[in-house]
Image (tube, rainbow, N blue to C red):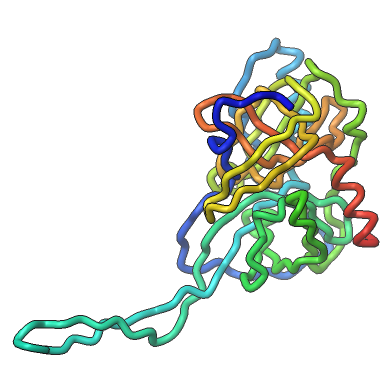
Length: 274
């Protein structure tokens, strides 16, 4: 296992966003994806490589979606009273309101609506999940399968004819190989693209989540690409456009990110029977 100065410095990607509402959508029979062109977040390559990366990102981008998580938040009113000549305040819950509490990324693995993401993106099963496929198409999603131990989950949206990504073979990944990570950084629907190389294989890390619970993940791909909050659950692509990993974690203050090998996800896809 590779030594770390501080394993607890590794944190899950989970962007906290507050919005009042997000409209529900319905599937359409034919899709005209209206995403803005993907944003390349880091570039260190020649003109030929840049063109290939842009083509790859534009081809893969329609299959990558933003997952918004909505939860019931208590609503309180303040009751004022005088006691012993002092003004007292007493909060009383009068109901709840639905608010966006977090967001992440996912990508279609089947054209009939199945999406792959991280478990920590959708870990609160009491929440409502919206798959923002484009700026004009937002669909309700439900949990189809979860694997908390490996931080993986499968979502399902109704409809068909969705663009899906080809799953590669992560056992063929090699150190020094060029890769492209795609996600929805900072909870924005325009896909962000992070370029880099695989720097190590079979890495074991301990991740500290916002809830304070530690999660141990083994056998990860390590890259020198820079990812951002909101990228969790997005795909890591090789230069053939095949998914070789799933965005999961980054180091704080360093351009080192970690990805769950796609072969691990293939196992839960088989278990889920999709």
